Image (cartoon, rainbow, N blue to C red; front, top):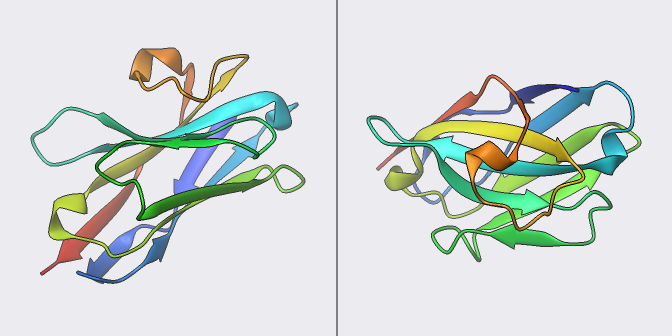
Length: 124
């Protein structure tokens, strides 16, 4: 499966932003999708994930309550939304997918397929 993340941009603190991860390939509905971010000069970190059917999500503590994820398997697309953005949310956001894995997997190595990333910059 190939992934394409989009929707990033320059926003102000307090704004909301909806990203997208579009997948090409077969059987996308059988893949867990995770979102990670990499702030400038820091390591990539887990943000949130959604199971294959879209019925379960899991979030890192740093974004819990501000971050939601949904998916439309008919469109092969996953939609994370970040509310109440903070300057510390500035990062390149990546979507990743894995077939057969658990939606509570938080390590980058747990995901076999990666998109190219989309930059989110939050100004204060």
